[in-house]
Length: 128
Image (cartoon, rainbow, N blue to C red):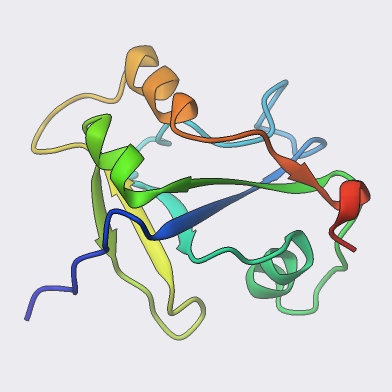
């Protein structure tokens, strides 16, 4: 049975960290790693602390360098991305963002992906 469709109005959240090596200057992933089929988002509007708890399962606390940014399923679809709700035990609300077929994820797709999001919220802002 295929996963349920995600409504266009559904909020989606991406976690980022300003000090995470590998993100370089930009704290939110916007490109696929070698062998990856999609980028990870979470269905809903969890806070920064809730995202850290979900992703790190108590191995660390949220820091002032942690943040989230949000979009909707409809914005990503309108930009040409495919969304798959593929959650499991660790994150039942996990959503994979990919491109149709064999489309290559280039810098243009990375820019379109970034353009779908609003300004990030950082832990020190108001999300303690």
